[in-house]
Length: 245
Ligand SMILES: Nc1nc2c(ncn2[C@@H]2O[C@H](COP(=O)(O)OP(=O)(O)O)[C@@H](O)[C@H]2O)c(=O)[nH]1
Ligand SMILES: [Mg+2]
Figure 1 (tube, rainbow, N blue to C red):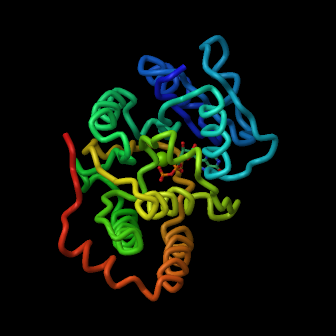
Figure 2: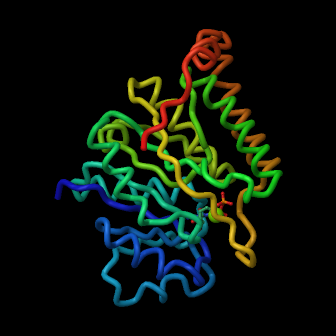
């Protein structure tokens, strides 16, 4: 198979996973990675015809994503699209990511929550802004919405990538791979999408202070190793982010 495959990490997403998977299936083969859910997330997928991979124990978002990505590569995927299982991303935007990727095959395409940004909680907006600044600096490229879990990764990037997976830093991987991608000669571009925060949704697994601290420490390590990489900061300041529509 030579198409894009869709990976959905899921940890206790009973309420939303079936609809998200069903909508995503309209746009490509779907792999759901159940991360030791203690609810009936897996049962929700019965009869749908999606691939379900399971981690016996909760291993964190990064390990789950990586598991799903490896499976997609083993099936010959040309690209992997990751999308969250909680309904905050619209699978109907997948064709827009694919269209940008067709034009820019060596780019990570981030579905960036640029529309209706004010609907995100203030703490999250601040945390995301901090993460974007540091990730951009270390990448030497303006990255928008570095914390979006909805992206397209070229298979070529993933095939040669050696991730550092940390259980407690489950959200660090998605920042680190952006920096490593740009350093490895890939571009990083954004496609604007809506910001969705449902009233009554389950609480986020992302802890703004703890998770952003982990991300900043990872980035700081990379900057130190590169003599603080002042050219990176200079490039970010000179060149605006690349936003594709
Ligand atoms: N596999 C796995 N997925 C997780 C874990 N924590 C969060 N996720 C998934 O990652 C996505 C984003 O998590 P979420 O809590 O919604 O973070 P937010 O959208 O950034 O506030 C969702 O699809 C979750 O199901 C985890 O420990 N393991
Ligand atoms: Mg979410």
